[in-house]
Amino acid sequence: MHTSDAIIEIRELTFGYDAGNPVLDSINLTVKRGQSGCIVGPNGGGKSTLLRLLLGLLTPDRGTIRIFGESPAAARLRIGYMPQYHQLDGAFPITALEVVLQGRIRRGFWGWYTAADRAAAMASLEEMGIASLAPRSFAALSGGQRQRVLIARALACEPQLLLLDEPTANIDPGAEEQFYATLNILRRRMTVLTVSHDLGFVNREIDLVICVNRQLTVHQAGAFNAETANAVYHHEVNLIQHDHSCFCSCKHPEECGEGRK
Amino acid sequence: MIAFLRELMQPEWMFLRYALLVGALASLSLGVIGTMVVTRRISSLAGASAHAALGGVGVALFLQRVCMWTGFTPMLGAVIGAMAAALLVGVINLCAKEREDTIINVVWALFMSVGLLFLARTPGAIDLQGYLFGNIVLLDRSAIWRTMVLDVVVLAPTVLFYNNILAMSFDATFAELRGIRVKIFYLGLLALTALTIVLLIDVVGIILVIALLTLPAATAGCFTRHLWSMMILSSILSWVFVTAGLLVSSRYEFPAGPMIVVLAGVVYVVGLAVSSRRKAR
Image (cartoon, rainbow over the protein chains, first blue to last red):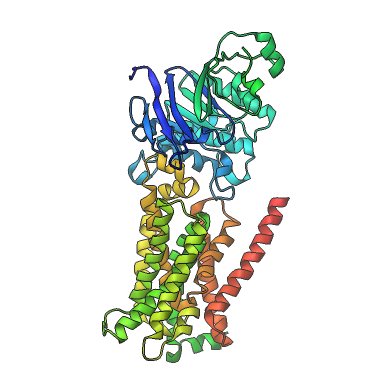
């Protein structure tokens, strides 16, 4: 059942790399326009697999995924994707601006960039607060700076849906605060889905907490015993309503909300 | 030195002049393809392709001498063998999730063995040494034309699709998500790599051709921060190594291939040391 304001609609999706051993089993998920979410779960629980399915890099064994009412492959150009930077060759000869320009590829003839592409790439770098790094070699940047360059590249695609894979991994705490502030600004403009095993991430201004561990459970952010949660996280948090159907078995079930009712 | 240059102009040094010219022309393709092979980390795949050329040579000589297919030259066999091996590994990589290094080694050994078996049943003298270590005496006018064609075939798509190639080499997944035909570009790169390798076999031989392909690019990679500047510097270095190696080896009567590779290797080690000291500061 497709609703017009659904950005992502997953119905009874099953996927496994080996037959009879599903990584994701009959999962359902609806993300509506204006909502943002965080995908959490233990390693090997299927977070990255879900991300690859959303990007159309994998095909479901059963069930359907619609993004903007289309197949993931058809919706690709409206999605901005940020991989983890350590998946890339750290010694590759390329500048930060050249990386961000990749978000503008295929807009010109033969894939050549126009002045407008360069302006858009610079604007994305500025939005991430790293315009001064544009001519620097990507290989010479710190982990946090590389992460920001890759987000800027995703923004240069002018996406309506932004998928970020572990954006706070390898970022120092100071830069993390700054990153959350940037993310909150972006969330006003587009749907942002973040993959994270950093549970601290969940507590921010996020509407949905998507818990993936073979099954998928969505927790709506809502009012819920603030004092207990604050004590767990040691700072002000947005709370997460949990229900009993959560199959989540994260490393820290208490932080995730498991067992707390 | 001048005496040496004058000597070079003598008719009996004709093959050396051809070698210098082929080397200079081939440097363009070497720099471009070498850079892509190094940055995409497919040098062992290129190694398999080079050795598979021998398989093609073996089959071609057999067909020429036993079956009397006179048009099936060793060069044609080498091109077919090298390309078939590179594309075979490439397609298996794309379609099946097998261990890449295993596939490469299997194809490498299999193609070479088939070639050697065919050579065992081929009558007449066979210059196996020449194929393995290079033989610049074999170079003639046609080699110059072949290398010119190779340069056009390599450089034209590289210039036209530079941004796509850059995006794909850096992050193939992202490039695919932006609608670039990543698989076609990948197989195209493998085909061009195989072609470049085969055309250089006469100069440095099957065993050393990968060194000539990767060492200048790896050296250039220590000092550049763009893919295009790495390609240009790598081409210049290739030309310097080939030229210096050919001149030194002919002057002191050494085989050319090893001399070129030793020069390139020494400069690479020096370059690596210099650049890592610079980064450490």
